[in-house]
Image (tube, helix red, strand yellow):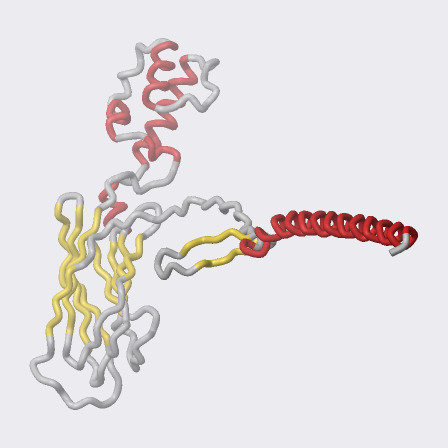
Length: 291
C-alpha cells in the first residue's frame, strides 16, 4: 500500500467518523426534542382538558367539556302582591238534613225547587234561621244547584253563597239551619248617628244649661260632639240657640233602632239563582222573612 493511499484512507475514516458523530448528535437532539413534545402532549391525550364527574349510582364517567357555556336563568323580580280584602263571613257553615220522599214517583215533566223559611229566631247577638228547599216538581232536579241567603248587615246586605247541592227526586227536600251575627251598631248614616243615647239625655231638661258659661259650653262640646266647627268665637247666646234649636231638635226627630230594624232586618233565600235546573216554574224559588 502506497503512502498516498494510506493518507486518503485516513482522511476518509476521519470524515466518516465525523459524520457518524454528527448524525448521532442529531439523533440524540431529535430524540430529546421528541420526548419533550411527547411529554407535553400526553396529558391532552389522556385528559383532553376535561372535568370528570363520577356518578355514584353506576360508576360511569360523565364528561362535561370546558368549552360548554353555563346555562344562565335570569331571576325575575317578584311582582308585589296587593292585599286582597275579603269581606268577613258572618255565618256558620249551615247544617243540612236530607229527607227523601216516602216513595219514588214516576218521572215526567220538569222539576220545581220551592223554598220555605220555617223559622227565624234571635239568640242573643246571633240569629238562627231554618229553611227548606224541596223539589215539588215531577222530575229530578239534577245536582250542582246552589242557594243564596241574603242576610241583613251594615251598610249593605251580606250574601251567603252555598256550595253545590245534591240532586233531589220529586218530593225530596233538604232542611237547612243557618246562623249569623246580628249587627248591633247604628244603622243610620247621617251626621248625628255618632251620638250615643246618653249624649242626648239632658235635652229633655232644657234648664240644665242656663247657668253655663262659655268654657262650660266649650268643654261639653269637645267631649260629646266634636271640634270640627269653628265655634271658638261663639257667644253664650249662640251656644244656647244652637243647642236648643238644632242639637236637641235633631235628637227629637231621629228614628230609633227598633223602627229602623223593623223595616230593614229581613232575610231572603233563593234556590238555584244561576238557573242550572230547568224549571217551568221559578216563582217559588225565593222566600223572605222579617227578623
